[in-house]
Length: 318
Ligand code: KG4
Ligand code: ZN
Image (cartoon, rainbow, N blue to C red; front, top):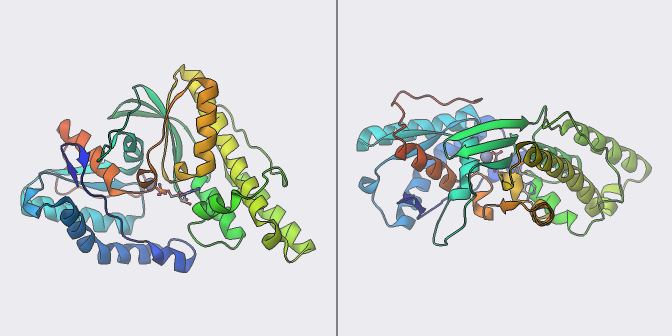
């Protein structure tokens, strides 16, 4: 719930169903959304100390994402907009990750100056975005294959870690030496990125090690995690630096699930000191998927009068 542009509540239903199956099973994800949507909205209202009738507009994620889960949110939001006779606002999930920088809650936070370059790193997307204003964004670089979060998750799966593996790789890597195992560095042309090669090389490394020593993963776990993580971060920061140079911009943001990664945050901050960037990272709660960022994006669209029709349908791919 957003009141006067400020977050009053940000409720997330636990996604344990994915853990159990080692990944996202689309049908189970949709069913979990159906089960959770009513209690989650009630809880958000309760925490914000509001009644349904106090809501003046409702924003929902139109996409990109899993169509079944998107449909649940879209149907709920459309029904609510119709029943309460309030505007409906359709939000682009990826733009919302960028606008997470502007979320204010009980704390006052500094926000990036426009124009800024945002590196949006999630489980499904990895994009460099030139952000000219809250509603004017241009993708200037993207991954050619896997997303950075996907590389974390697939790498973790190779190591037998549960889903989503990104946070586990982050934790195990703390005790690891990133230079003990080498993985090839990938540098596609200009601002393009690629992470599928890292995953394949990582699988080959683990297979070879495990063939020679059945305890390879157990013994080397922190070092393997550190190597995988460092390789992904190297490419992300290299491309981010290139983007800032090409566009002569020092205002920089990092957001999306992978921006919760402790090593990425640390190294980005060091790089910012060296390069003179004005770096912004959302607090953890607003890095991974959250309702507050959708509400924030909805707030800007609402101010611009960009409302959606009650027949708006979700889109899996933007
Ligand atoms: O933005 P997000 O919550 O959902 C999508 O839009 O995809 O991002 C989820 C991704 C997953 O791949 C997850 O493993 C990764 O973010 N992630 C992390 C960390 N926390 C979440 N990756 C590395 N280190 C983390 N601490
Ligand atoms: Zn996301």
